[in-house]
Amino acid sequence: MANGPANYWGLGWSLGRRITRVVFGDSALALIKASPLDSAFADRAARLEGEYRHYLEFRDRVTDVFGSTAAFDDPLQANEVPVMRAMRIEREDTPSFVFHSGDGGQFLFLLPDRGIVAVRLIRDLFTEITESPEFKGKDTSDPEIGARLSERFEAVSNASGFLNFSWLVLAFP
Image (tube, rainbow, N blue to C red; front, top):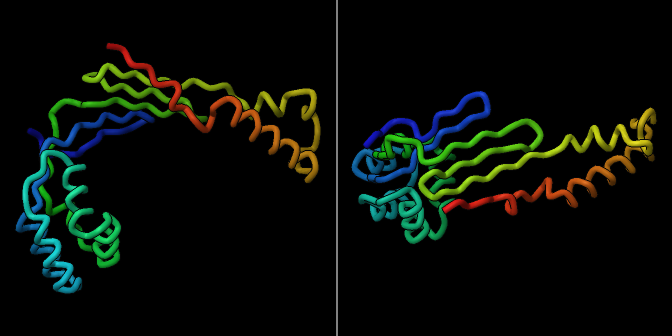
């Protein structure tokens, strides 16, 4: 099992590796105890000590102990306590997902072991609207024209699903 970075990314591409084990132990607890956080926080954090099969299982335990993840995360961040660096997090060696984000909302998302492919291709709606007879050659800095342009763009965006792409997820068995 690897204990390196969770993701590799560049030029719009991301390769992610599934977390297979999280250990919250002595190193993390020592950081909390040495921080300016009060002893009650440290005592509750001690109840997190253990090994978890994945990160979500750890976060569920945080919620059980602290009532919410924010009740744990916020004091750590406010006091600059780098607990995540002190935790042992192991990941799969091979990528478990591939993601590419293009300009303007296009994307490609692959989950090979689940047979899921999600693709989103879109038109350049803004250019299509601004080049329409209604707006072409008009002064879009004019407040009235700008308001109509904004309304038109929002209506087309909402109608096209620009803001909601969940329906484009395709599963292949």
